[in-house]
Image (cartoon, rainbow, N blue to C red; front, side):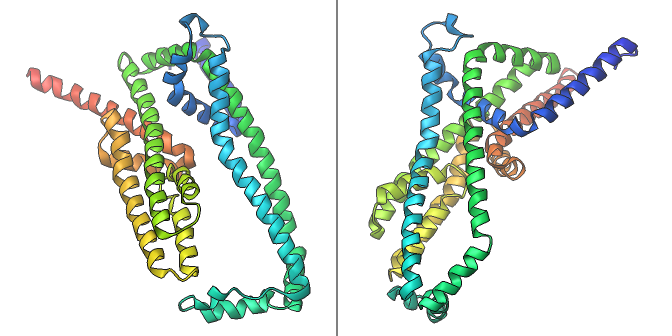
Length: 353
């Protein structure tokens, strides 16, 4: 830092203002990062929607359309899931009402479960098997935290919805001013790292874009292959289950929640062989896709070694959650570029000598 008191005071004042701004916006930093990730991954599509370059800096129909399309793609499956959840809640409410009068007999397949069949049936009878047991269980639920959990869930859902609207608003702003923002980021990178800063920034954006492409390809491929497996196993609605698996497959190892539940349903229906085959097939497909195919798709686009791509994906998710799926590979790509430049600078004097 310069010894000039004025420069030092300006630096300290700017740093304090930066920290204050970060503290004010800390609750929205994740949303801002998500908006940037979405903008980077969809920027080539937005460029094709522009009629001419003079539309940069203005809100265009392409920006509105692409923002609304992204919102619909994300909200549509979530809305469908919430509607189905509400329908199932109504059915559950009617079931519990009936249970208060006559109880609920255990299903036939429950006792056929290996090892735990008798224990499961006995516990079912103790909890719901008679009207007295059902009333006692419902009283315990109503006096416990079920109501508060429901209110908390509704509050969180409303909070997430308004956060998502904020994300779409920021995304629209990024589309509007993305050209100027990109030039400013490149200028800042050049000031920090010299002429090499341009390459670092491009590597980071390529890593983010290739991560999104890898997510989509993995989701489509796994959804299709698992949909075929669901149909062969004899499950109803295999296309819908395959689509749901494809959505979850975009997150590493999340798809096993879907095919795991499907395997349990098959086992409960007495199809143990089909259940075991479906679960083993799903696990093999998940291991191959998440440990080999996904890192290859992401690392190949930015010439990032396989192991560093894999560590960037899992390390990023462990540190930043789902957002780390994009930030991790981008950070690894920049660090690898810096390392290669460092090694090249070391080897130059040796080569000249």
